[in-house]
Image (cartoon, rainbow, N blue to C red; front, top):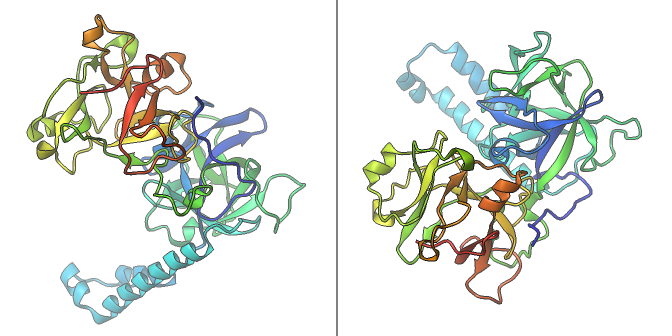
Length: 411
């Protein structure tokens, strides 16, 4: 069965979740733009990385106002007071209240115009889909091009987060609707600099740097998920969308599926794989063996009464087989089950030694385009009610069937 895919939409709209791909006339299509450690860069590979849904998805928001925020910032820079004195200052308290009203007005404006088509010449903001932090052009010089500026994520960006969407092709002009898939130019309003991907050199993390320069360069905009999950029945229960962070509860034993760290790595599988037969894991042990920073892991069941609500071990996300699609999951669709903090995926070994032993289950390297990873890591969501069809509701009960072997995940 094929995975769910986003229903094609002709034009870019406010509120859409999107991803950007670098377009270089000399090298053709480049990699995916991603935000990592607060800075924008581009992965060298033309295929989406395992971290795609957490690093490369941005939400298109309208131009927001920051008049009150700028005023408060100026007041704080001028005052030479302790935190307690500032909290008791009537003028600062009034300025803070004005900022809160301004933020509320910005949220109301976004809700009001979400879904409207974006046109060339319009000013927008790009907010990281996971953190909601806006992309901005900083004051520091770019790492690889001292004549350019660094492009970063900044919670205090203010109007440094304003970008004007301009056409790259001569056949398009300002005022026309922005068509998905077309190359665009993102022009910084404050400086008139344009976002581009540096051709030479690499940042310390191996990505090419996204900088702001006078050179006119292009990025291709593609849809990850329409605003509000367009195409779904508004009266139906909220669907579970690809890329959303969830916790998986095993109803029969009242426990959470967890990724527990392991220093034993099975090289040919890219990770340590063991049968999922472990019972409750003590909370103290769980904290000591976290895999939030990445690395190999085993799969385990953590009893609800031992579960730490702040633990990252039990955070997962369902990804459509095409991980560049954030569409609602569908019954019968193929999915990856990715451990959100580490980026690794639930997977099985090549086979069991005996039928009663079943197949080993743990985590593997998430490599969406590799056939071996697809054989081990693709699962199917099967409803308890055989008559169920369409989108998977967020609170659904389901079983997990391994696509390649046809076997079921159980504890």
